[in-house]
Image (tube, rainbow, N blue to C red):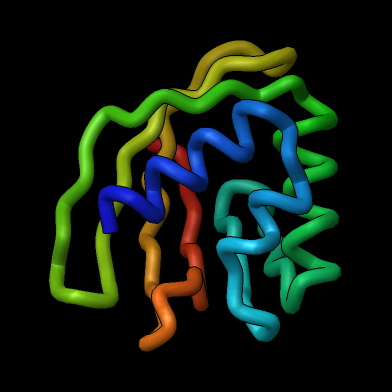
Length: 108
């Protein structure tokens, strides 16, 4: 999980939307409670990254990872960008293939 989260942070910080998408299952969901919307499938995930990472010039820094089991972890990130500064919790769920299946995101 540490490697996957590291790849997630590296690709999003580089605004590498294609690289970030390659980490996700085709039917992945990002449910972002803080914006009140769910982004479904690769098209939805692309929209999420383009809007909230590229669009806001967002940089993420890992604060902690709590591994729950082989497929689930809670990740705490420090976000900075055009919006200012926020701390977020991303609940990662992965597939058997090691791809991100779901992220439940919220701000502290």
